[in-house]
Length: 603
Image 1 (spheres, helix red, strand yellow):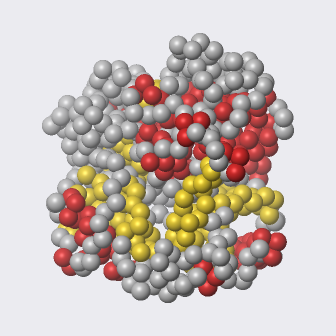
Image 2: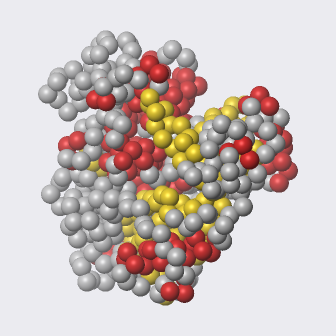
Image 3: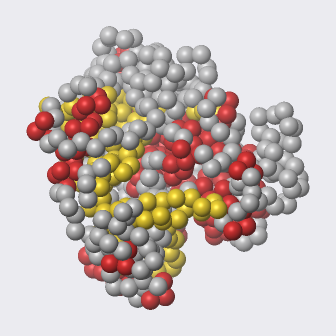
């Protein structure tokens, strides 16, 4: 989840690693039990073929030829009985990174709508450029997809660089892999109407991302531990010369009757087997590693460990874990109680409000591992297991508060749907989406965890306040700059920030959309960009705001969605849910205008 700590335990600003030509044999990798990454649900071969045939029939209208293809990646439930398919665009059978379609299908598999992030237009056109020096296959008109290096060489280069940077022995959380891709090198350019605008006056809609040129590359996934700290990276490595073109951190983290630490005595579901109670909730989720939702004891390690077991069905002592103490006794169980209550309420929020089951929409069970590492000031979602890890804290208290759990599980939903790339503006939106989920889950849980809507209030709009030892939250959604690093509004420099800071403007947008703003210039919820009437915009409530965001994220956003695209897709989602020209659509426009994304409008 959230921002780096004052004394960072895990996250630092992204750094491009230097190219390394040394082989995997030169890297000291103590082999741990590899965990295969969980695969998204893929429709049947027949259903995929039928969808691809429909998309291929549209090629001529889109100005592309038969060298352009489609690869169905995953499918998940959509609203009102529809299905949503995620489809990668390909060139000569190779996926084009960030170029994809989100297709909504009816019950018969027919396309109802298509939301696309199109980065393929230059391929097949003589005016395009393959690479900066033309060495990656000549003109883009016939861009070659034959690599000069193997995928193993690309993996070896990344692992060697990681080992040198870490300075310690690395262990694998999952076997590394590399996928050949066409990498569109992007640049921002001004739209014609904003050509002469001063930089300080630019709005998000004044810039557009365009493809500068294409590179043939490998997308390398490495999931290793440096000591006991997760070092999960995605790297883009040139398939021409092995240079590292881009890199981003894939640890999606927070820095930051059960007797719970933060919520008093709470009911938690357990399973009785052989005279022992297990912290497995067999009413939520199916399959997965433990057959249902579960809480495990990492016991200061980096793997899941065993499911919590107890002689009685009374768990925890409601107190902060004492460092060095037993992780299985009453004090150690409290972290597990925190996790189970958060897991149950997040599951119920998604299911009861959206009929969305578990993280992937298909009710696949997940789990949370408590007591990860020692005195660890972090919690994170891992794509190797589609699960969460919660630290005990050192500068912080146990990181199992309800908003933190909701946040981490929110990463799982995004991973199963839009899969927003975890860097730049899309990475900020990814983090913000989890913050939004955390606040909605907190409001739902505080109101009793029942019903099919999210109450207007009950959450505090501050991430991680409970885990802070001095009651200072990790993030203020209504006024992000209170943390000293997050901006309140979009600017052209946003994409260069760490994703835990570039999430700030979208968090503020969501607060305004839900709760409205204030016209007091000295207040925390004033926006200088709201110039229409009334000066203080009206909110539409947390339930409606959350529904609009969830619909946009699951049925419209692509992996490369940025702030400008998010605004357009949010307006579409609001109109689909509540009608065109309604107060909800207007509120979306005003909420984005309040963070310098698009123009303000009168209510």
